Amino acid sequence: MALELDPGRCALIIQDMQNASLTEGGAFSTPESRAHHAEQNLEANINRLADRCRELGIPVLHVWFIVEPGSPGFKVNAGLFDAVASSGSLDRGSWGAEPSAATAPKEGDFIIEKMRMSAFHDTKLDTMLKGFGRDTLILSGVLTNMAMSHTARTGADLGYYVVFPEDAAGSFDGEWHRVAVDYALQNVSTVTDTDTVLAALA
Image 1 (tube, rainbow, N blue to C red):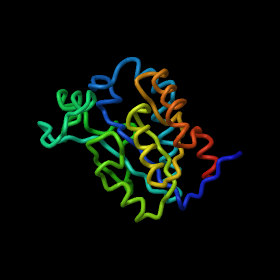
Image 2: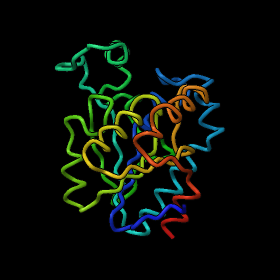
Image 3: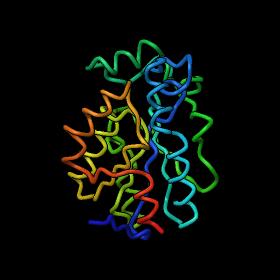
Image 4: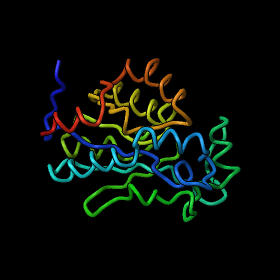
């Protein structure tokens, strides 16, 4: 069955595309992850989606993980959060917290900050989507097994129709990505690819 999308109901989420996870020298960037992202054609696919969404007037929302310097009020109750706090890699104003140049926001895009894995947790995302009248989410970004999976689950719980073009997402390597898609995301989203999403928006 062909994917059908109504541009008037869609929003594009671009999540955690920050230097810390994507760029050489980033705390969470490794040769394996960068090779995987290159194989996915990650940045190019995200840009293809974003450019088409902008043309159609579909909201493009960038979600960034941002912690205040020194991590005040940042609860360290899991390994991931300990890594964020101890490295300072996502501190506001740091190089690691800055968006990757390849997928940086453009005029008319929106920016949402978070301090947890899900883009919905204690953020304005749900309020903005409802304000825009959007109930269909196109998810892109990193990491497939963490932020992407958490956001897809929460979105589904909140009643959103979640579309996941898997070649516009990436993880630590191809194996991490594949496991997250096959054992998590396929249960809470429509797993597809960038070409199919673009065709559905034509």
